[in-house]
Each structure stands twice: as C-alpha cells, then as structure tokens.
Image 1: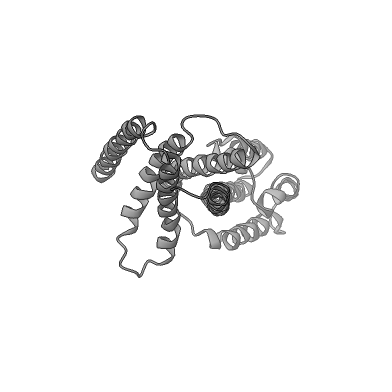
Image 2: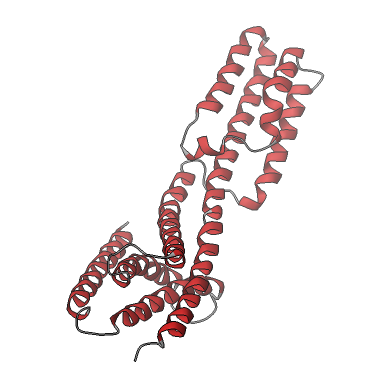
Length: 271
C-alpha cells in the first residue's frame, strides 16, 4: 500500500509539473513560432509512440529495458500527459473536417478505454481475492464441467428422490451447463444465486433427512458454480478491454502516420 501511494504521488506530481510546463510553453510559443503546430504535432506523436511501445515491452520481458512496473507507471501518467498535448495540438478547439474528427474520435476511444483498463486492473483483482483467490481462466471450462458432473450424479442418482431430480432438470441443469449472469457479477449482485439457494431451501420441507443431506451438497455445488461464473466474468472483462484498447491504439497510430503524410504532402512541411 505504501509503495502504491508513493508511486501515485510521484506520478501525479510529475504529471502536474509536466502539464503545467506544457501549458505555459503553449501560451508563450503559440504566437512566436510560425510552425508551432508542427512542433506540437511531433511532440505528441513522440509520446504516442512511447506509449505504444509499452505493449512491445510486455512481449519482450527478457530484454534489459527496465521493470514492467516502471513502464506501467510511465504508460499511465504519460497517457494523461498525452491528453494535454493533444488538446494543445488542437489549440483547445474542436477538430474540423472528416479526417480530423475521425482521428480525434480514435484518440478519445483509446483514452477512455485506457482509463477503463486502469480501473479494471486495479479494482477487479482485489474483488477476485474476496472470492477465494484467482482461478486460472483457461481451467474454468474444465472445472465447470467437473461441477456439472458432480451435480448430475447427486441429483439424478437412483438413490435420490424424484423431487430432487425434477428440481435439478427444471431449475439447475441449464445453470450448470454454462456460464451465467455476466453483467450481474460485474455489478457484484448475488441475487440469482440467492434465489436458487432459496428455492433449494424451500424444497427441503418435502424431503427426508437423508435427502436433505444430498440437498446440502447440491447447494454447495451451486455456490461453487456461481463463484466460478464470478471469476469468469471478472477475468473476461480484464481480457476483453484489451480487444478494444489495442486495436484502436494501432488504428490511431496508422491514422496518425497518414495524417503526417498528408500534412507534409499539402504544406511542404515545416520550414
């Protein structure tokens, strides 16, 4: 916790200092330099390129390029600083023209998805720890199948009552067959599992004592399956946001390169 606070305070102070310096430089230089837009454009592109290289750093952990945590901090606060540079490059005016609007929209999507990813990467792992620690995502289908087989064996065994078997077929077979309640798990809602457990408890008054033991075992499997769905929902969110952030990041870089080509083709570049 102390390390996180130290990193947060250091990053925040550096961001505020760099942002303030950039804004002061903008006020001083925008009227003095005839090619000021070119300067801000190249500075912005340089920072965007630096942020894009963060993904390359993650894929090359064996190279002596500094630890991943340092690069992550650079990526986070450099991303916020790039927003300031982007606004400076626009001179704090809305973009005009279809291409410029598209470029600004791509930048906005990358920025918003990056902020969303920062929130998810900080909040979701802590939530997973409250539900028994992280389960390997790749093993979730296998574990779910095992729970299904145990539930079917309990509920449909010849030794059990037809009441339990009928309840399983009507209310639980579909639940054990696949993942459920993705959005409700993200919202931390336990309403669906509580409803199933309440229905199981209601069934108890129709059963013998021996059948009640089977019912308790079935209820425990329901809780385990719900916890597995919870892990799948949260881990899927951590993975899915990258399918938004990374493709749009690369699209933004391609559009930016095309923008640079167009600027130099039609203006002759900065003199």
